[in-house]
Image (cartoon, rainbow, N blue to C red; front, side):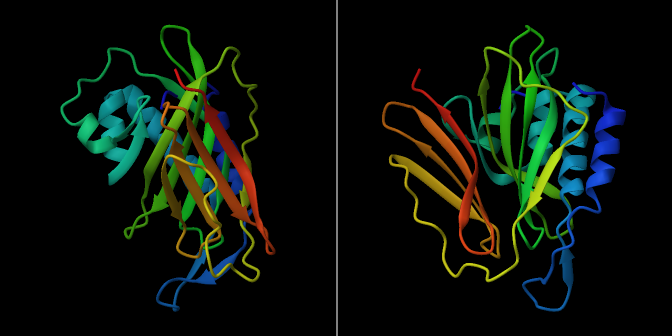
Length: 225
């Protein structure tokens, strides 16, 4: 992943999202309602980006990743193994979230946005987040690529929450070929996959349940190098 709107504007947009989602469903124990709250993921992205500047890029990546997280560098790697002992660059990449989709139960989300490197290059990122048992968010998949032209900037951060209606009993079949890894929220309303073809081309997708079917809400495709 390679990841600037002013921090104040991002925080303001994040706060506006707090009231956007009202889906409440029982948790795995059936005794505590969870609120699908996209602003929590936006706030975590902002904290992640700030930590990269304050504490070092790879230090921040290690801190916010789960033990089994995967990332692309550009090949797929186990993040904590690849990051272990890796020195922080003198200047960290900067990034800003631009959108987030979240599961009905509020336990999984996918964020996307733009990044800028100190050398002037720019691109996009896609990150899958899971809510931990202590309420914190950590990423489990991070992907991105360079762009010839930067994504447009806006103070508004888009958000969408999966429907809680008639939640699916099964995950959609994977359509990609090659080395495919698929994950899903506990309620199966948000599904993500990453696939690496034999020639190294890769695709990352996110699908959201709309109450009747899965919709592909994000698809990143990177050609073989």
